[in-house]
Length: 431
Image (tube, rainbow, N blue to C red; front, side, top):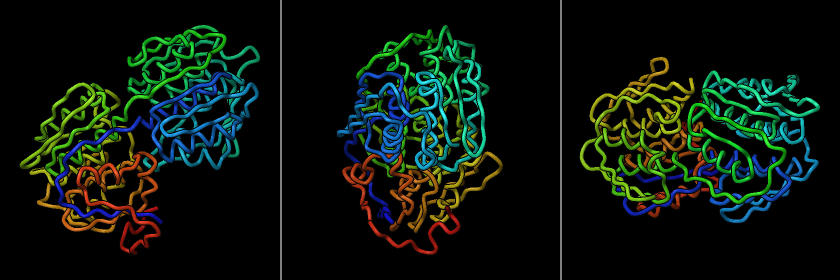
């Protein structure tokens, strides 16, 4: 197995370029199912999750051509309507093909999706949207089947009990070919939703209100091909911002949309970092002690749950006691045990973590239990005394393109080891 070895205590400096957003690339790739014309997606990061989504579309009969940073897709008129279990189990975002399949081909049969074990992420909101548009639903033997009426899906008013990004995106893609107008209320407002709306509009869809709580979609008879460049990855940017701050560094981060990082920048400034923005770049520097914070994760534009773990690592060496409340996923504190192995003092109380800052963390063998937990361990290791070996790096590879190369260019002493043997002490009991 691979591991990442980091010798901590090096102040990061220099420039790093953020890749395209994984969470924008995945729905964009799924949207190619909505037309028989070619759809070209640029700015696509080289990630395991992207590979999985491309494999999934290939299995559905889509022609997929991958070159560095770009994916070209062409869906035939008779694509398969059943997604294979082996691919769907790897990644929850694979369920995003259900909406396009249902809209264009009239049916979708999907295994229950997998992904990181960070808590219950029910797909009932996706199904609620499909049912509102007239689909018949059936479940059994680990599969979900949705079948549109003979005349196709019809426009409807869809209220989401929670502003789920995935459910909003699936409902949008189902609605663009429906007969009539669909209104999605309490919709997710994340930049990735807006990015998908921009792609759909380029394909001929009529979408208004993306980025607000109410999205209005007027269905059209068919969509056409388009070329689209996805937005930068705000979570990758936030991770490098945390890395710069925890090491007392001075780092320029290129290819960002500062407006997407407002909550992140606000909290980093509150912790004592200095942040300057200029166009699509920002500079993060820090010196002296980091200050404790109170953080509560919220749907966008609130503080992102996908940066909670990285900020917990940062606050583990702040001068004082911080409180982090996780409201999005109920099981997203699995990184706590691994940070504790490195000397962090963290106590869990329900959905809150009380983080008492320590003078320094110490290197140790640790294990990533999910994508963002892995990123948190990298951030912690960069500021730790001694060496940290991180196992389970497959989780990290799902969301960070060439992380060791990018951090190495900033001065980090970091290397990937292949065929590493995991210590029995590393991540005991983790799965």
